[in-house]
Image 1 (cartoon, rainbow, N blue to C red):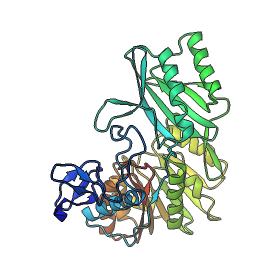
Image 2 (cartoon, one colour; image 1 turned 45 degrees about the vertical axis):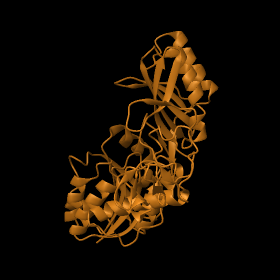
Image 3 (cartoon, rainbow, N blue to C red; image 1 turned 180 degrees about the vertical axis):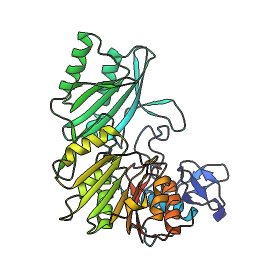
Image 4 (cartoon, rainbow, N blue to C red; image 1 turned 90 degrees about the vertical axis):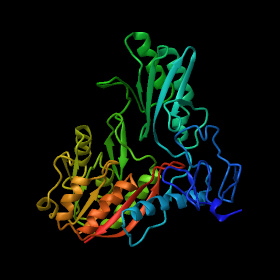
Amino acid sequence: MSDADLIVRIAARGDGVTADGRHVAMSAPGDRLLPDGSLEHGPDHVAPICRHVPDCGGCQLQHLSDRALTDYVRDRVAGALAGQGVTAGEIAAPHVSPPRTRRRASLRVLKLGKRVQIGFSEQGSHRLVDLKQCEVLEPRLFALIEPLRALFAKMLPDRRPGEVDLALLDQGVDVVLGGLEASSLAQTEALLAFASDHGLARLMLRDEHDAMTLWEPEPATVRFGDVAVGFPPRAFLQATQDGEAALIEEVRLALGEAAMVADLFSGLGTFALSLANDVANRKVYAAEAARDLVMALQSAGNRLPGRIFPEHRDLFRRPLVPRELDRFDAVILDPPRAGAREQVKELASARTPLIAYVSCNPASFARDAAALIESGYTLTRVKPVGQFRWSTHVELVGTFRR
């Protein structure tokens, strides 16, 4: 056999790649591609523990050993940087979230006669995988799958799609349902009984335009640092608590003693609230385009008087310009998957000494990193974070210094 048949790495989309460049689905580094197209498994190929692999689109990499999965998370970041000609001073050891720690999920629902399917989409398809097992969801979320199936069986019209958004908050599980109605007393009572029986933090119904709260015994909140923030329906929340902690700790390491900090694309204040009290005189300006998130952060920030200064601002249309950026000792940048091209252009022209760039897309990060480095920044350290265990979705924190 030739070494050309050996699987040497995992590509960005999860396929194994042989030494001569062929892509092989469901293979691991150290596997060998045989002449008949089958695989001879190596030491880093393990048996998937979920019955829905490989159909479910959530876990493309469950056949990798822990070592190979950790290597993939690191290599995913290193490969994206190399593709843009970017060199990091250090790529730190990756953090990978353990199984059964995902604290948020969006599920699809479909009723076909008496049968109700609920779960994720198949990989590369709109077909629904009817969940009977899930090794990534936090147990309190997964425990609601069968009760939700029964609820939709009673209340969802036949062949009508439904949706479920789950998030684990301070008070328990937040549930937002789509496709159901509470137009009668009986329907409302059934939904309230469901919320009470399962000890939900909140139960909401939503349509195309709005979400209606049916059950919320006490205000639904999520805690960052010592501060509880009101949680708007379907607001962004880091996928796992341990992954969030890893990102926060890496940003904390980057900021050091920085006193004047800008948190751009701040969301609910994951970083602003968690890091505001680290330094005695630290002040954090927080810019966010979503008005409901800004209002929640404003309310929470009132518990840290003189520390948090939120602004409702669309940074794609109105990024901070150099004269504004130059007031800060450090900038935290946490944009959506597309990156922060407009804001990076302004940072490239500013004198801000430190940027902690939190990214959920190594490719857009690498593109933005190349622009910052060209303007005089040095990428001193990158920390890869795999919150979405067994998936190809990788996050990171990059530290840039002038």
